[in-house]
Length: 311
Image (cartoon, rainbow, N blue to C red; front, side):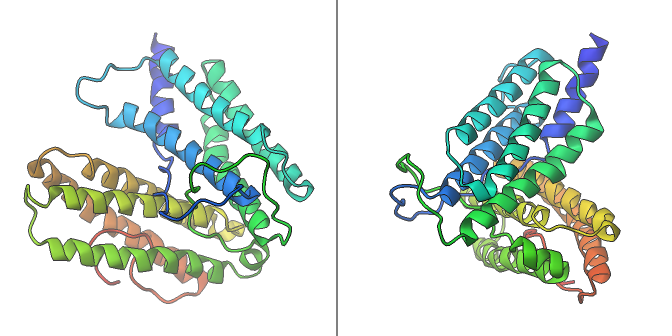
């Protein structure tokens, strides 16, 4: 029993950093789906089931049954099984097949460790935070850049939610600073718009709680997209520590925003707002270190924290 309890803590630590799927765009669906559309949808579904498991561990619904370690392992394995099935159903173009094979192997490795009821934390964090997100980003960039992005055989039923565009691998490798700015600019523009919407709501009240929660949920999706974009940049070794700190602050921010988007009473939101303020300080410090080491000037925090002060 003690071993299972310790493994349960590991599951919570591993899954909690996974982002939720970005909000679907309201546009007419392509018919049929392109390879890029298909991979974007697979990634969105992958992040969605990770977020669902994370919520069952960290923020379970009132009255929801507590899942034991064995049930959590089964849920994780079922999630990976659905992702792997979706990836194997597509006849991917030859120019991405090697990367797809590696992506599938990494996912199989995580699933197998949970199937054994044990896991190597260092290995799983490397796969989750670096290997798998970078492969998704790399393959998606290659598919979008290809002039022969032919459609797959399955017709589309919904528009695939697409993460924040990731700089092309060749550009990112040649100039990580420019690639980083592209990621930051994308989320900062959306974050400024959301901050303006929050300001228009005025003081927190029961009447505007629902509107606030919708904005916080969008902020959470922006954090997930920001990390997806950063993970697609091939960072040099000297910047790895800086990047990990920015990713950790962004992950913590996303968790806070999703918690804020689920409160039932304005009174419960106040302590979360205090935590958001503290997290913004850590976020701004991490961003400043990375920007300094990239040779970039300081600016507003590059992950979209609500009501973030200019830095």
